[in-house]
Image: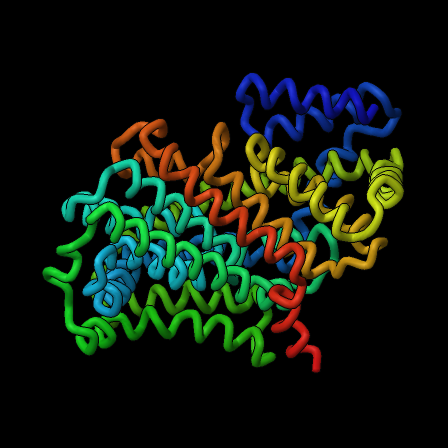
Length: 425
């Protein structure tokens, strides 16, 4: 049964069937073709998978990010970052990384980060003479921080799938996210200096006091979200609802840039995005249920622990596997299907579940910027109005930088576990 489901799933992926539908159809192959279970198992397992309180945070974080975009908050974050790094040669490229890092602390989604920041910065970078391939590739890679720096939707999925503490996962993503952001900043500043790009990036920027004053409400939003969670005042789900209310307050009352039509459009986009994610979760849960009945997770964990001697060998093998998987399978589906299997093997070899989850999410985030799936690539190409092929050469440099960071995160657990360790003291 397992072989038939996996074969069906891969064939459906190959013919470009949407991820959620492919998972559901593959599950139906196993359910109706190899078991005598009643058909009601299908909707029942989907309902059980979605009937989890932490999952409610996903649509609200997506909505908060979209409301920030239409309410003027994302533009003010760009102005704030540019005010501080704009005078540097390559300062506008550095602004791209810094703004994505700040926006990531609110949206939890790379696509939300991509459109909120990219629609402002890609035209600006093109205006100041940056090559279109470099601009689009940098935006695609920087938006990846949206799923690493908390709050992160993939972290919520991993926590739900593996019964790992979501607040601990959020904390574990902070230092890895800062490491990757710092590495990208150094890379773009050195690159721009070598190429002679960005010599006029300081032209037309706001002074630091004005930019800070204009962005203050946007800058307070991550403090409100993460402060509520780690102060013990709110759960991640409650914090996501507060984020939406705060974005509405700022957009309508404080900035006065949001209209009812803009809010409706943001709501519509959020519903579509969240529905796709929930469909994937539900479909993946049926597949996981059938795999569990076959004993696949236990057998896979036993094989992995017996095949690789020690945690370092397992971590290297898992990184290679996830890099390939991320190129072809959507991040949420990969986490829901593979997360419980790989986490069990990792725990058996003494790898902390929070550390492993961080490594898994950083690795799968690479799939967002690598063909053929590469959702960030296609979104950046759409905004920049260029082909993906012109992005590939600069993209190789950025991917190499992130892989180097991934290896450091994988084999230096303290980067992921220092902040969660402080929380438990």
